Image 1 (tube, rainbow, N blue to C red):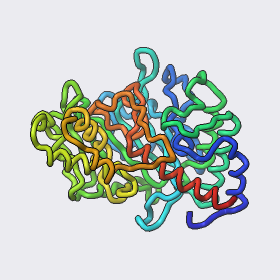
Image 2 (image 1 turned 90 degrees about the vertical axis):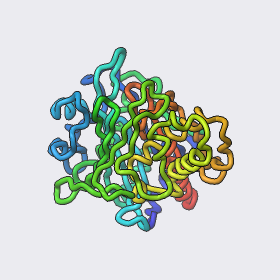
Image 3 (image 1 turned 60 degrees about the horizontal axis):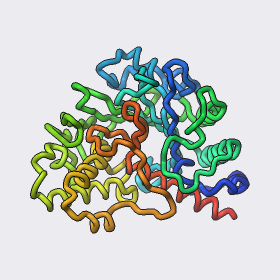
Image 4 (image 1 turned 120 degrees about the horizontal axis):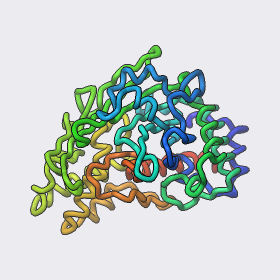
Length: 382
């Protein structure tokens, strides 16, 4: 942060018995409820600072999220499934910072045994002042202290406080109240969308800035378009088939060849595969790229492309690529607990793929960077 509010920041120190800030202290994944409509998750009717946290009228501008839901059904089904904080999002320019609270939304539907998600999502951004961000940190630490959870050394996952709680638990209500205290129409600045198309094998991405009370679409970085799409028709989804990134991003860091048809790369092509694995490691590393210089699809597809190469072309040595380009931070547990890492149609960043937890390595790495920044500020006040 450029400015420190000492009397607020010093309050954070009193909760140090529960450990330093870790991955699950800056990125929070909610558990899926047993039944839609009888859940505690926030929805577009939830009112925060200055109005709804996601006004229903904005959904008229955003393309339909799913071909199997009407707009009204989507609005009714949308829930906040995750929250993240960021002390230094690269806006208004990459050289400056915005303090942010961010919410991940997905539509829920009934599954076989509990609620599950539709494979689409919204990401809403809320700007905080320096004072508000410090106050948010204090409230998050107080919540953690109340429920006596030490997150030190744990991988990013469904938040440990919620791992074994029953529904209608006070910890979820208390956390929702924190969100509503800091997020709402007053400070909503941006909404990005990933919508499902085709037969569930095409995903389109777009982003909207909030200007004068309306959504205004912005250009996808590394392209000349306002939207970008990814296609993968592989069955089963352990490879890439009839794939495409459209428009293909400009620049060397891309996975354009792997995602077209990975069957063509079962033998040979070692240098091409190594080049694209290197690109994936670089894209997943927040010290190289951020939201203001990387296109949507490359960011979301880096993990499944890299996982395909490591699993299906294990004959190639990637050690030097990992050591030179992959994000590394020994202070945190960077293990990825996503149970379906090899699924090439799972391009979820932070949320759920149907009923499965889905977390990208990029989000894990970003969470480590955020925790580092906060820990440095807290330590500086001691």
